[in-house]
Image (cartoon, rainbow, N blue to C red; front, side):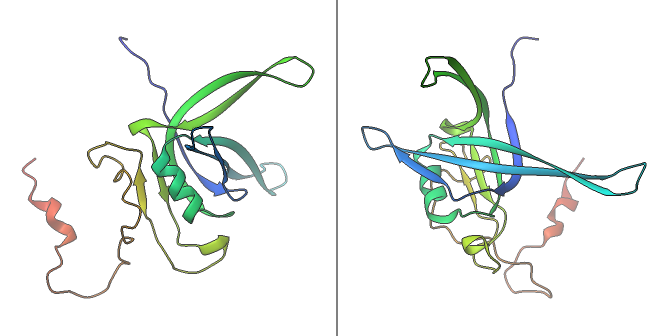
Length: 173
């Protein structure tokens, strides 16, 4: 194989509001804690079990940091695409420590809000707004189009001027 792939895709919920810090030159860095869960039934007892994994996510992309700061709250469901990165640091005792995080930077990153929950509660404010990481040519989102309205909710009945979702039927293969 000629190359390698370092890509992480997560769908989960924020365990806390985003933590926004700034570098010395004023650029934002956002830290997120995202929980993903899986459930299953214990074969012996029939009891429902659940396991939650916590993922540290660091956003260096200025546009995505702005989205995180303005719109994300504890409990929000998000879709992210980034890369794994391990960094080495020293604790207060001088011991080497390692942290592996999901990093969103550059144009290969995506952050999508999957629900319209304002402040982590219910509500149908913004739904499914998608924000890509940069110059992606609309692969995975629009880099930095923050005030773009959310996708319209599904509607019943016909509507003048709306394209049919069945346009894929005309594909010649």
